Amino acid sequence: MKWDFFTTKELKPKGWLRRQLEIQAEGLSGNLDKMWPDVRDSAWIGGKREGWERVPYWLDGFIPLAYLLENEDMIARAKKYIDAILAAQQEDGWICPCTKEERPAYDPWAVLLISKVLTVYYECSGDERIPKVLCRVMKNFHDLLESGEISLFNWGKFRWFEGFVALNFLASRYDAPWIRELGRILKAQGADYNEFIPLWKRPLNYWRWDTHIVNLMMMLKHEAVSAELLGEEYTDNAETLLSVLDEYNGTAAGLITGDECLSGRSPIQGTELCAVVEQMYSYEQLFAATGDAKWVERLETVAFNGLPASVSGDMWTHQYVQQANQMSCEKFPGKSLFRTNGQEAHLFGLEPNYGCCTANFNQGWPKFALSAFMHKGDRIISCVPVPSAVKTEMGCVALETNYPFENRFVYTVEAKKDFVLVLRVPSFAKNALLDGKPAVPGMTEISLKAGECRKISLSFETEAYMEERPNGMQTAKMGSLVFSLPVKAEKKMLEYEREGVERKFPYCDYELSPVSEWNYGFAGDELLPEYRDVGEIPFSEDAPPVVLKVKAAKINWGLEEGYENICAKIPESRTAIEAPETVELWPYGCAKLRMTEMPMVK
Image (tube, rainbow, N blue to C red):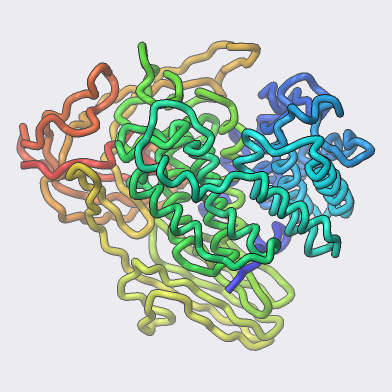
């Protein structure tokens, strides 16, 4: 069954999720327009700095963040940018900041991206200027592509499907043949990723469009967003493509390696942060288009592990790439370990390696929050059961929970009309109880009558277990959470200026050096959970809300050849050199330095 998203007027975050969004607003996301030249002085608003993807990327997350928090200052600042962009739209509809003569060489990826942002702005603000503006943008884009004056190339060619977010928006409002014609042009000029599958099985040490990790994570939703408009049958092509990507490049945290291009299954290779949030967005779109619960389960894994792992607790700094086994985040003195990234890509900072993630990571939490509930007809579904409340003409549904750190849920429902509430019990749930009665994994429908007010309780258990990883390694998991051995870090603050961009506290860079032992292997597979309170920082670097206790022993692990601050891909020895001890494993997203894939010791 297909599902529709609620708007920011209808859906609001609560509990730890709202606090996470508040932290984001107080950090880098909420301040880029004040201190980062590529947003503050962008050509999109008449300045001289970057006039391509960075302002649209930032607005794509900043806009829903502002409206979810009902932050009037942020809403006004978002409107300032939108007003400037609309005011600069040219007579023929072109909206990007370049001259008519520059259009053929201007990568049309920016057209696709700003068109998506305008739909986001309309859904949040209801600004009635947007449909007409967007119609002019896309009609002009159609005419330019059809005439051959411009064409898809580079990023635009490999991200053609991004334009369907706006095309679907327009198709629901206008009956114009050119909308579907533009869809067909985009697909015809765009890349067919099914042709690239052989390239994904053997990572290479050079840059390619067809193995670029952000392109690939965006690509997962291509059929979900385009099939209906194109009149094509949906085939679940994303599952086919993802299965290959995961088999040859998957990580323990549900991510795909890519720094920047596919990098194999080594736990010391990286995953770009842009890819993390684009993977989340693709999963959100895939669930909305199909109703298949596998996509929201995968979404949870990425959101609760990969996203918080790459961002500092205060959300002022982030990494360009994260590693599953990351015992140090120090600049490489010589050759970079990463296949196509530089020496600083794994530092926490303002724009390590490249600034795209600085702008783009902002969409992660706000769009995730908007996926908590969805609706269709007389049905409301609790997709990702995080603390939220939705208020519609059918009624109100509020969810109190600390999931994923606990597995207890209380829904308070007030029905204004007859409707059906759909609850999702995850596939990994054990001993589930719905209002005290046994429930099974899957979708459960509860019918509500107009005027009815009631509380609905759901609970289940999750078992902690070991998952096998390549080269005889193991990873601890429980529900949607991945667990790692935390490594205590010493932070070295780096304040400096480079190419006119200043790094100063709190948006400076940091190197993280290990100050505790990291060279462990598992000495048993009994994992004992211990539940704690969710604090002011949900994915705290100091006080995790839940831990697993396990026996572990030190081994001679060794360093990767040629490096002093990277553990070896595979341990030199799996024999214990000291007696086993009880250690704590933390949620992957809490442990900024961590060992996630470890061997069983001899």
